[in-house]
Structure formats: structure tokens, C-alpha cells
Length: 137
Image (cartoon, rainbow, N blue to C red; front, side, top):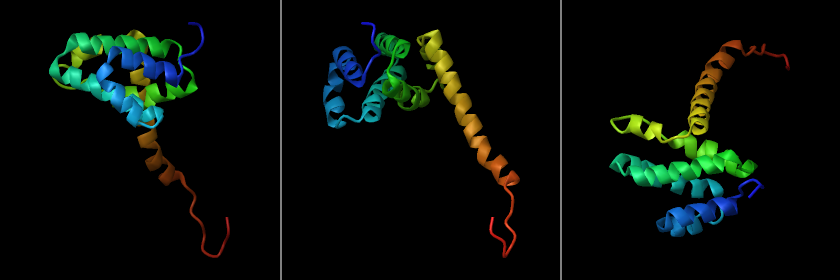
């Protein structure tokens, strides 16, 4: 397949690897971000339970999707997948090792994005010009 992965491809691939997610994928009413959250929850649960074979399958699927996503799948992978993965606790380092280098880079980029974003309001508030009473800006 040379074309980018679409939402339909994502749903099909996830349902094939994780048949227990079929209902969640269908119940999302076609909302990709909700479907992606269901996928993320399964992998986070696998990580927490130390189900490494299951986690590995999911991360391999995520890595494949990351290689060639369409714009919608790319956005959902960044915002509804990578952003919600955590690598804290005793299982964190093992879980991190299952991410492809590209997913690791994407996760780091999302963490940096959130750091920059959370820092902006404080800086913007200090630099924002004040309006003078009686004057329109």
C-alpha cells in the first residue's frame, strides 16, 4: 500500500489486532480521536499489567501508521495517542523501549510542545500592552 493510512485503515488494522476493541471503535460514531483514545487505553492497560507481547503488537501497529498517515490520522496519533502515553513507574522504561525511534521522537516533540504552550500565557501576560482608560486600541 503506497497511499497514506486513512481513518478506515486505522480502524481496520486496530480491529484486526485487537478484536475486543471493535465495539469501542463502532461506538465512537466515526470520531477518529475517540477511536484513537480506545486504542491508547488498551495499550496503557497492557503496559500497566506488564502484558508486553500485547503492548509490543500495539506499538508496532502505531509505528506502521506513523510511517505514512494522512493528515487526520497524523493529528490523532499526535494528540490522542502519543500525548496520552506515559512512561512513569516501574514499567515505564520497558514500555519506552517498545516505541520505534520515530514514535519516541514524536512523543518528545509533543512533550516539548506542551511545555512551550504552558509557558506562553505567563510570558504573553507580562508583555501584553495595557490599555489606557478612555482610549481605544
